[in-house]
Amino acid sequence: MVNRGEIWACPGEGGLEVYSGGLSHTHKIRLGKGRGATVVNKTTKHILYMSVALGMLIYAVPRLSIGEGWTLPTIFSVAWLLFALAIVASHLHAILRVDEEMDAQLDRVKKHRRRQLAQLIERRLVRRGQ
Image (cartoon, rainbow, N blue to C red; front, top):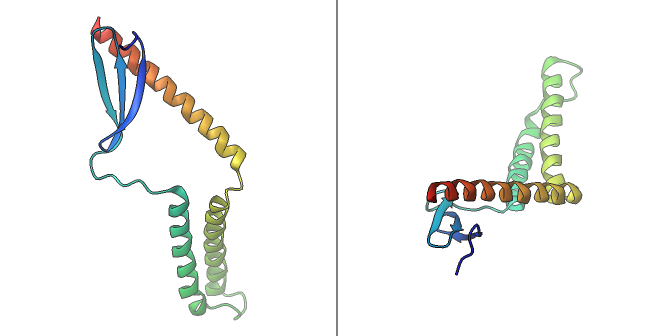
């Protein structure tokens, strides 16, 4: 038997299903994307993007005009290289998980927001049921 005000969630087809139970009824709300949604691991995404950036660097470096003095093409080449290296560095930073404390804090904030959302949904469902 479900206690009044009890709320629980479980994975469903294509998203998260949130249930709010009452004494005589149960409400079901589906959160998330539709069918066929693919979940990609964050690390996998960063590895993929970093490899694309590295491939772009490998392809472009021989074609860049560096070493001909401070001409406009040289300045552009240096700026382009700095931006590309910054992209690679940011993905490497994410892959190595340098900010684990910050990730833990963000996870706590996300859990708190999910709890608040679940409570809001439950309050609205209880109001509808009365």
